[in-house]
Length: 435
Image (cartoon, rainbow, N blue to C red; front, top):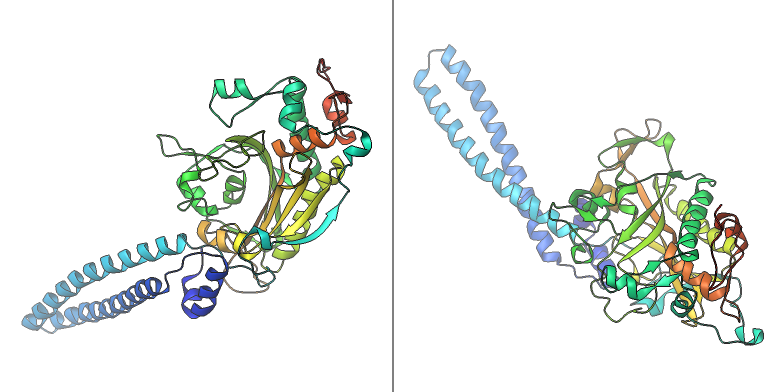
């Protein structure tokens, strides 16, 4: 959430930022609510001062035997109390409306973010690896949805039977590959300084508001009759671990990771990536989250992106990194790097991780602060960062497509062989050995 004082003092900059983000911004509505609130506060403070002075005078008048004057003063105090109730309601209403307005406004892009209208204007930063030339290998590659079906490790029809469209079932080596990827990713991140957490897969509205999913993106969330929501990412839980807390600067940055199932309604995505396991309602993901000081924030973003890249490098999957332009940034992000893996079925790169620095946008919503007595008095809002490390289903799709063989089998990446119980090649007649 943006700071109301900053918005008040930097109206032109906020308006320009929202225009660059293609986000609606009602500056006049903000100004009206902000003025109403400030006038109410000023009037409230004046009335409180008047009441305090009158109450003091009443005691003096009573001591001096000035009972009539004291009664007049008492009547004025009653009037002031009634006015304070009215003004208090006006302030509360303005406060609530102003908060609702600011909760719907996205974060301001960092100055280093390229200005652009949409994903077509994102900027490529670097590439790693070379996409495989299947022509040189003498066969045409299959898409992962065909490979998975032929190998009997992904069952789309039964996934729909058991649940609904955009659900799928993994069996045999497919189930083991999912588990292997999760363990491999978590082990890799914890070896690089991340603390692992095991989180609830449901969250309350306050928690989801803290990271920006609510109120704006409620249609993308599955929810229960009890008012809980299935989490769309472990970012929600990891970031809010310290909601309402004041952290010691000496502990920062905090580096957390977690595997969770993730659930998304995918509202508004009809017709997109309908085949395969790229865009589904339930998927596994290993998430990274950091809580830092402002001075550390963007350096930690570079490091987090490198941590996501490290997974793909160990799996020897070609990828590229792009910087999202202003028009393609996520709601809470001030700057984002997307890591995109090469998928032969798309003949292009496909997002497998988004690493974002959210500045103090989420911390302000979740009230996450830090203190550093050696540098300043009081406390300040922290910076939060999040990134996929990685989306497991998309990683599986990339492995199946990039490691497929002419006979329809799939070679297991070397880094995963120990996690697959020594299995080196997945075949249709595979009976996965037990470790």
